[in-house]
Length: 112
Length: 113
Image (cartoon, rainbow over all chains, first blue to last red; front, top):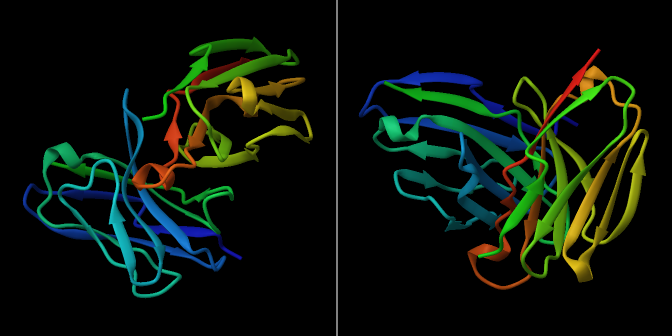
């Protein structure tokens, strides 16, 4: 039981490049979500999913895409990286609204 | 949206001391969690506690939902307890807010030997 696995742990991108942050969970959780953590801003919700094939926007969705083709995987795509997307990204999953969330170990992304 | 305030913002303890961290929230919640972010940046789930009291070793937590606050108690603190402690809540109302965990700004704890 690996929990929530995020890859890569670190990434440096040039402005304009695209990339995908991977997130996988093996707990059969229906809810999955992506947060970003910035100094002084706390953690903010980017996108979330309540099940395979269902995704929706969170508080800060601009510049990011998601899809949920399986229960296990929830990748986050940066379409054209910008320095404002420099942040630490966390993936989280849960059985549902009234259950606790489990977080992955994070991806530290720097856009230069 | 729902507001979450944590106090104190910073705390320095001598190893072996006890402490109480507080989380106040502005509206009804159906989910409250305490997390520890260690110096390596990992977010560790400590408690899922929308109401009542739970204990896990040296840590315990109490949430009084009707009065909109939660407390995290750390007893006999150790240097490995250092890091940032976050309280996060979720509103029961519909829309994106009901899926979003709203985090407080955290309490930075430093335990010195």
